[in-house]
Amino acid sequence: MTISQGDTLPEATLIQIGPDGPSPVALAEKTAGRKVVIFAVPGAFTPTCHSAHVPSFIRTKEAFDAKGVDEIICVSVNDPFVMKAWGEATGADAAGLTMLADPESAFTKAIGMDFDAPPAGLLGRSKRYAMLVEDGKVALLNEEENPGLCETSAGEGLLDAMA
Image 1 (cartoon, rainbow, N blue to C red):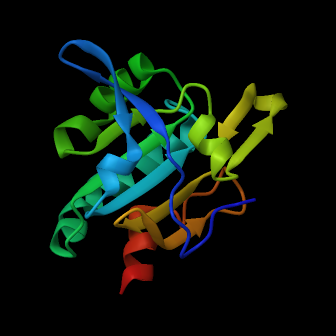
Image 2: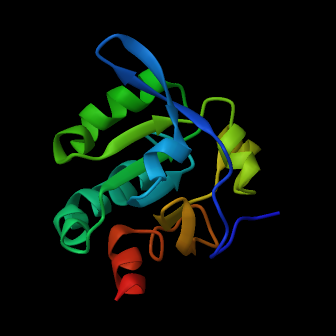
């Protein structure tokens, strides 16, 4: 079943590269008592994800800050080393975005956002979406119908939905 507005996020542990290497990140702790944006992409360094989706949240970070968003998190079914390198390559790290890996697709599957695109070599990946999470509950969810598009799930699309 796909997660929807009003649902509580499932328990999930993602992975981030910190100063001492890979470390677990409990999503429940990240979202408890906070307003957080989570957006997901089919893959780090893939064309639309790299040139449109991440840049849209870099461009809109200050607008999200002004709306009281505590953190913007990018999730991808990749390993944490790739997510760290991608955060550096896109400027997401410098902009203050948090890059989290879902290497086994456990979170992605738990919220029903997994898909396969064998011709592109993408298996067990995440659909493209953006959500606003308030104290662990989904307040808004913008899912793209086509993983090659980045419109409603872009930073601007989520900001428009928050207005």
